[in-house]
Structures are given as structure tokens and as C-alpha cells.
Image 1 (cartoon, helix red, strand yellow):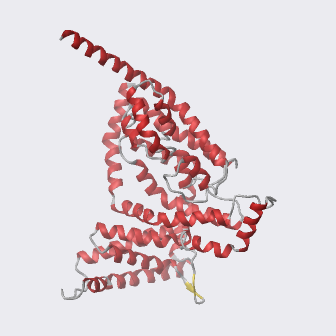
Image 2 (cartoon, helix red, strand yellow):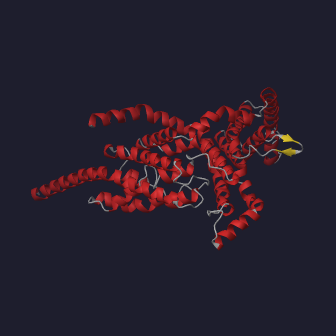
Image 3 (cartoon, rainbow, N blue to C red):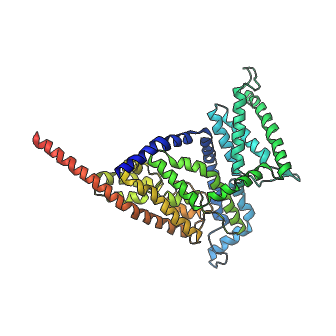
Length: 439
């Protein structure tokens, strides 16, 4: 067992850690993550509006309060939808500006100008104008990949032109704000002169504008992103990276966020249309079934630590249980420790994967409500699970079941680790006693 563990650690140190480190520091991955983080507050508030627009009551309910709420939501639905349409409905606006601003900081460009340039690049290809109207079809989830690609292109082009001094320079006496505005003129011209003709060319030969063509190309990937194998693979990668001391969740969510947001928008559209929800594996599923208490679903483990016979483990439990309620479990991960601890590798890796399988199967069978809202990742798991599914009860039951299963799976490994610590503690006390007697 020891030889196998050492071999595994060797593979992680030689291959996985360097690769994950490079991916985690890759400028475009960081920019995409920053773009989604910038959009997050707007999307959370927009998602929250769905609670008021689509209350969790049966359409044929006779409960007076519920009946009044449902009738009110139907009567004023168009007005109630406005905050949602101007947040989740235009999420690509926030994402493109966020990505551009992040890359602008990386290249030491003006972040505001880089963000606005990225926004303009997105609108050039994703806002077709017909019959004196601009189509908003790609401002939501369907346009996320286009927003990412155009933001990266615009920012990189701006940086490339700046490095080669292809810019308009004004005398030093000109105010800084005015000088920056003129500095971005040539990048604006280049972006318009490249993206707009390209969009027209693609539309001429394929009958599709660029966002539509991108979604056609990525349709197999988007479909595959919402599958049990993909979910298990993403969880496995996250757990292995964290076990090696690398923030695997940042890497995995950075890759999965575009898929999650695209599929979330489709679920919300289906909810508004009264149609079956098409997708299961979304960020709310990841946060509230697979990361209960943080990566590794360690909230149940924190409770077990509180009653451990080991003073060290009890102390870590007291330190970590409150943060774990809000999915912050670094005290547990590094204090127990779980990171690079061979005894805890199996449960740490398998617990979220087994929870994922149970939750996926139950949702697929229709026993658990699907995610339709974006929630803050710090929301306590049972509350967040219900909130993400429009405040239904079945996700709470599923979350509590996952917590129970996590405790059952962690328990034998924790007891084995506890015995090791108690034995070492006894040996240390015996050695101290001998030293005291000898003196």
C-alpha cells in the first residue's frame, strides 16, 4: 500500500502538478474566470427573480396565498421579467467586458477601454439587425462562447497593435482621458474591419451568423457536458488536484462555466415556456450536491471530527465546522490534514463521485427538481440546493441523503487515521515520561 501511494504521489508531482499549475496560470483561463466572476452578482440577482415569477406552487392549487401569488405573477409577468431579462438575459455583456478588462490588466492596457472594445466585438457578430430591430437571441446563454472568443480576439488584437506602436499618439499636454480615447481608435477600426466582414462572409456561405455557427460546432460538446461521465471526470480531476494542494475547483469551474451557463439559460427558457427542463449538471448541482461543506463534501467530516478521541482532530473540527457551513473548508483540508494524506485519499476522491452518481440518477428519474437558478457558492448546501431548484423540497432531501452517505463513507477512514494519531500521541507521552524520569 505504501509503495502504491508513493508511486501515485510521484505521478502527481511529476506530471499532474506542473500541468495543472500551467493551466491554472494561463492568462486566457484566468480572464474567462474573471469574466464570469464579474457577471456573477448580476446573474444571481436575475436568477432570484425567477422565484417571484414562477412561484413553487401547483398551477391548480386552491391555497389562497399561493393562488394569489400565481395569479399576480401571470398578470404582471412581462414587467416582472424585466430585471431577469436585463441580467441573465444579457449575461454575455457582463462576461465580455469582464474578460476584456482582465486581459487588459494582464497586458497593462486600460481595462475599461479593453472591456468596451471586447463588448463592441461581441455586438458586431451577435446582434444582427433586421427590420429595424436588433435580435437579442445570442445575448444570453447561446452567445457565451461567442462572447469568450470575441473578447479574447479583441483584447489580443489591441495588445498586439500596442506592442507594435500602431496607435495614435497625442502630445503630452492632452488630458490622459482624451489620449486614451484616441489610442483605441485604430484597434476599433481593425476590429470592425475584420469581424464584421467575417460575419457577413460566414452568413453568406452557411446561412448562419458566427454565434449560430459556433453553437452548431460546439453542440456535441455542450451535450456531452451534461452527462454522468463528464460530471464524474470533472469531479475526479478536481479532487486529485486538490489532494496535490492545487485549487482544482478553480480550474474545473473555469472550464465548465461556459457550458453550465449555456445550459442554465436553456433550463430557464424551458421553465418560462412551461416545458420539461433539459439539463441536470449545472453549477447549482456542483455546488450543493458535490461540494457540501467545500471540496470533498467535508461538512459531515467536520461533524465527525467534533467527537473524535484525538485532541488534534477535535480542535480542527471546532475550527472548521462553522466555515464548512458556508463551503469554506481549508481548515479541514490543511488542518486534519486531508491534503497528501494517504489514509484520506480514497474517501476524499470517492465521496463526491458517489454523491454525484446518486444525485444524478435521482434527478434523471424525476425524483429531484432540476436547477433553474444561480446561487452564491457560499450558500449552505441544503438551502442552496432548494434555492437553485426554485425552492422545492426534494433537493433538500437529496442533499441531506448525500451528507449522510458522506459521513458513512468518511467514518471508517477517519477512525483508522484517528487510531494512528492516538498511537503516536501515546508513544510521544511515553517518551516524554521516560525523559522526565531520566532527569
